[in-house]
Image 1 (cartoon, rainbow, N blue to C red):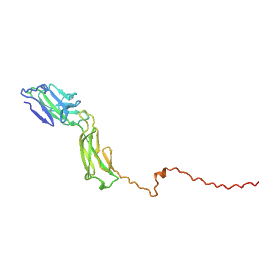
Image 2 (cartoon, helix red, strand yellow):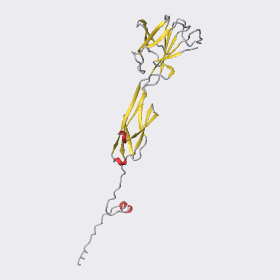
Image 3 (tube, one colour):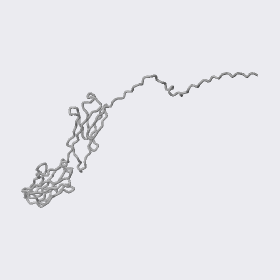
Image 4 (spheres, helix red, strand yellow):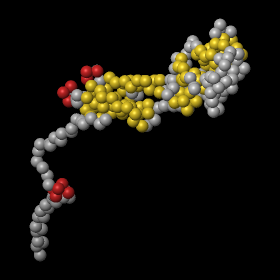
Amino acid sequence: EKPISESNSVKVENISFGGVAEGVLPAKGTLQIVKHIEGDENKFIPGVSFKLFTETGQQIGDSYTTNQDGIVEAPNLAPGNYYVQEISAPNYVEFDSQAKIPFTIKTDATNGIKLMVPNKLKATSVAGTKTWEGDKVNDRPKTIKVDLLQNGKVIATKEVMAANDWKYEFGKLPAVDNAGKAYTYEVKERPVSGYQSKVNGYDITNIKIHEVTEVEEQGEEESIEELEAPINPETPKVTEEPKELEKP
């Protein structure tokens, strides 16, 4: 039988009374810590450091740091009660340096202890305000929809309305992926008829589009033929006086 107990979301596994571990658990007297992303035990976290103490607070060894597979071991522990404390972790995960994770090495155990210790990815939020320009209150729709994009892909949509002062917020967003690379977030408004949308950071401004009215000038209209006809100045008339005949 394989007893499992939970302590502060940490899964503790050991095998007592001759049970078969099938290679899952460490050797007798050994503590194995496996660090993983919360919610996914197959996404491991390297570079997490711990200190190990007896239940009376005596430190054992120096510090223990997880390898590339998120694993670190402390061998040759005598039977008794212990606890570990996390002292450092990569900057893309949250951890509590004050939290104590207890475990027990039993005298009659045939295998060691495996601690599955999760860490939450650091969270962030996106908040913004909708602003209206060049319109009247009655021109505006009752609600609008704002999409949240993570690395260019829509992952959430909020319905925004005047009752909330046209404000919106997307909370509890992972700041980074499982590899520690930061996500890029942006907002985009669903099209609103009669308005042009502009985004500045996470704020959105809707500018009213006004129709242009053509005003005809008063006056006589000239035909195309008249406009295209060449302008010929009037030729002045020259009147010649008759010459007198010479007398013979």
